[in-house]
Amino acid sequence: MTNTDKRIDAYIAKAPDYAKPILAYLRELAHEACPDVEETLKWSSPAYMHNGILMITAAFKQYIGVNFWKSALIIPGGGVEGTAGDLGKIATIADLPPKKVLLGYIKKAVELNAADASAPKGAAKKGGKLTPKKTAGAAKPTLETPDYFLAALKKNKKANAAFEAFPPSHKREYVQWITEAKTDATREKRMAQALEWIGEGKSRNWKYQ
View (cartoon, rainbow, N blue to C red):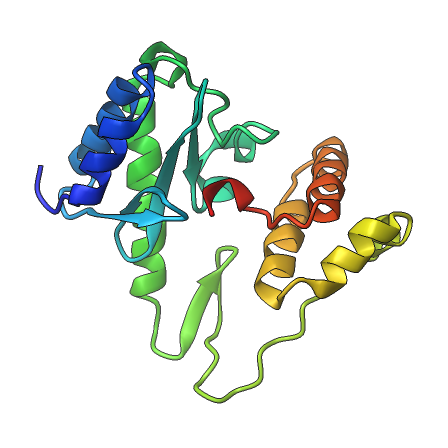
């Protein structure tokens, strides 16, 4: 493998024994799917980059979480619901999708990032459409929080206060996560989880910070 980061070597070496082969396997797949992939740490976890984040892997005591930065456009249904990651709780290599499927996910992530990178000057790709990029000094777009989420927040004083205190980036992460839900049931589950985490003062990606 090329373009390796010694910090990921150290991360894998310090990971629980069950996690070492899984982390190493995911690392190998990242390099196989994208020979020019770059390694780094994001939120203290191994991250694989190419024109942006492709995939983040994080080891916990009993499982590994795998997250694709654009999972809504990569994994059918947007991935597994809950806190474990887009692929669910991974405790063994056998818990992962087949190699061909995983390589496909990573290659799709590469394609999506490349599309953003190659978009016409002055435009950015968002949700499959090209939208004007912000120029230096331009005002940031107003964050549009859905009425149904605002209503849910107002019913939870602790979460509402915490959400109001969040920086725009944290708010945007939650709003995007909720609005990307493809079904009402998924949206309700995500809102319930969001209210719990927000009430605890946690960002959407708190596990990786």
